[in-house]
Amino acid sequence: MLEVGNLEYKMAENFLVDLKKEFSGRDEKAVKIVKLKRLEQENKTMEEFVQEFRRVARRSGYKGWLLVEEFKYSINKTIQQKLIELEC
Image 1 (cartoon, rainbow, N blue to C red):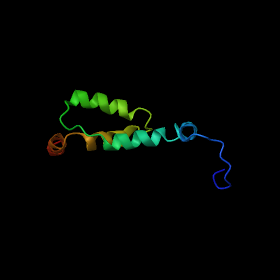
Image 2 (cartoon, one colour):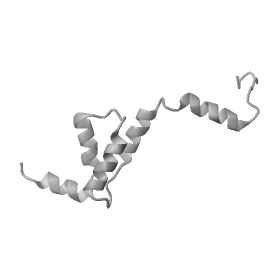
Image 3 (cartoon, one colour):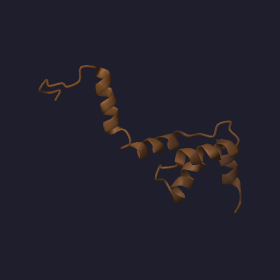
Image 4 (cartoon, rainbow, N blue to C red):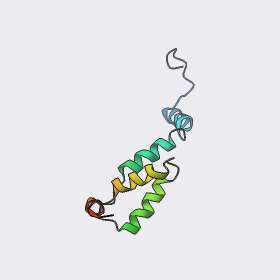
């Protein structure tokens, strides 16, 4: 409609509301994955971080080893190193 000049929206706000309705929800899984990949423990306790990780991981589609790998990558780097150094 924009290309031919036929606009049914008189206010940009109405257009943006409809645009959001049209495209929201379709990429919810992608948004969850990005949030999961950006998540870091930083100075949170492990209990606090696990709760946050579970909340963010919901509906990401990640399961099993992939979820475990994301968890391992996002925990505090000092803890990561200590886990690597453990003998099994």
